[in-house]
Image 1 (cartoon, rainbow, N blue to C red):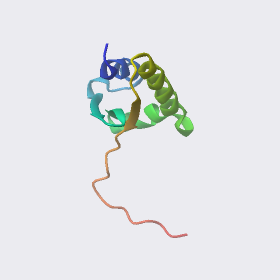
Image 2: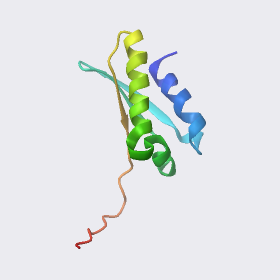
Image 3: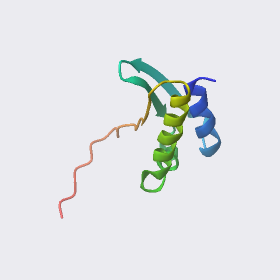
Length: 90
């Protein structure tokens, strides 16, 4: 099982739209970068409260990578809002 499938197997059972889960792998001189894209309504689930679930995923991938002798980084892609909202000044 490669890194992409491993990450997909972790994420898909947790989200409401598992068909929209996309994992891309980029290899460079610093190691392997896995980018995760999910439905925007599933982003809070993937990040978790105070980012704890995302941090747990990073730890799991780091452990998986050490067994494969690879340095694995993890990034969640957030869709940029289509409209720029003005900031509220208090």
